[in-house]
Amino acid sequence: MPNNQILATVHNDYIPFISLASDEELAQFVRAQICHAMGEEVPELSGMSKALYEAHINLSVRLEESRRRKSEAGKRGTQVSESQIHQCQAEVEQCQAEVEQCSAEPQPNTITNTVTNKPPKSPNGDDDRFNRFWLEYPKKAGKKDAIKAWNKLKPPDELVEAIISAVKRQRASPQWARDGGQYIPNPATFLNGRRWEDEAAPQNPVSGNFWGGVPDG
Image 1: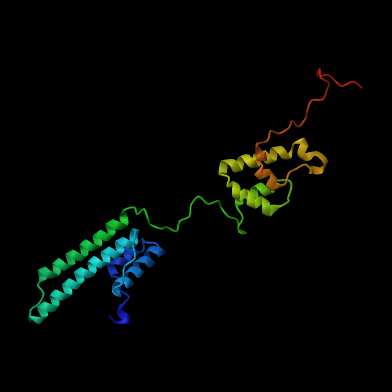
Image 2: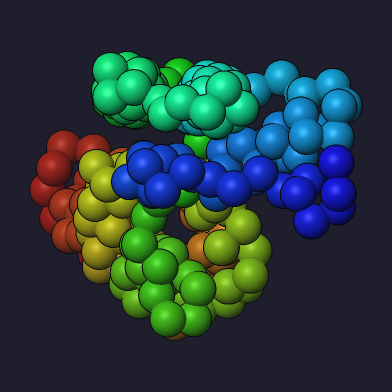
């Protein structure tokens, strides 16, 4: 086969269905056509690439058979009957229906480019939910380590709200406010140690002696 005929031409009727396949499936489909045209072993296919390749082979066989019939009829000096033309068209339509059916069925191995369950990103690439935590946290130290701890934690939305609520609560506690905030843990330490689960100390502890009275002067 000449080199310029190695790449098989995709039938126009396949175009609406090709848009349903992913880029990787289309690449697998094209590689399979090249291997088939060069007489090499076709790699294992799956999903839409397999459906397209099988439909392509079936259609190629049927079209080749139709051309053979026309050639034989021409040699005999006769024309292809109208019934034969209708039969070939019916076979092509059947092949198209098979491709459409395959595209409508869920393919377990189909590769999609849709990415889900990813937290929203800010323009600088940070997790917006981490930025909320960082904005509320009173001690701005070790941001890189804090991001690493946050990514390791991968908190769902409910936990994000619990962490931020705990930061607001503990930020107002006497322990964090004492001595200019020197007892506030670093953000990474707070996250790695799950410090949002700590019970906040009372803001106004009751002073007095053992019996609850005012201490003796």
